[in-house]
Length: 142
Image 1 (spheres, rainbow, N blue to C red):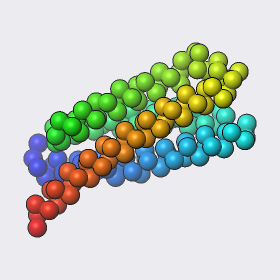
Image 2 (tube, rainbow, N blue to C red; image 1 turned 90 degrees about the vertical axis):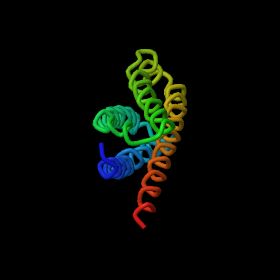
Image 3 (cartoon, helix red, strand yellow; image 1 turned 30 degrees about the vertical axis):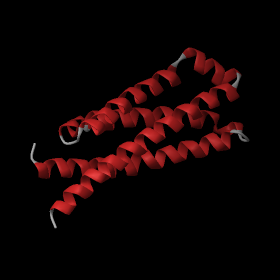
Image 4 (cartoon, rainbow, N blue to C red; image 1 turned 120 degrees about the vertical axis):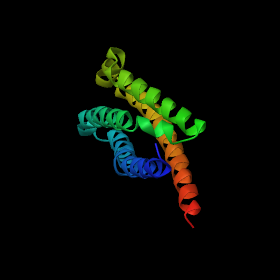
């Protein structure tokens, strides 16, 4: 893949991650915060997390060729994110988690919050690395 194709893929990935992932992360954090005082958001929260993880899984599958364009650190972070998303999907579909979600929401939301914090930190690291790659490329044009 040419350098130009790579940089275009990197820019598309950053735009996609910002427009979908980052915004949804904070929407989920908002729902988690609201869930502490509003039972009405319980179903909305779980559905939002499931939809978000499914969407990110599809996005990453569509951007796997990014690994050809980035250094080993970013490729490693992408692999870690893929595993993290699969772990999240497993978490929200786990019968024990669902049971806690229904019967002891506090335990379930703590697990979900811990997962989402790690997930968001990982995504932020990837976005920062991709941005740095883009800046290096753009500097090379000057």
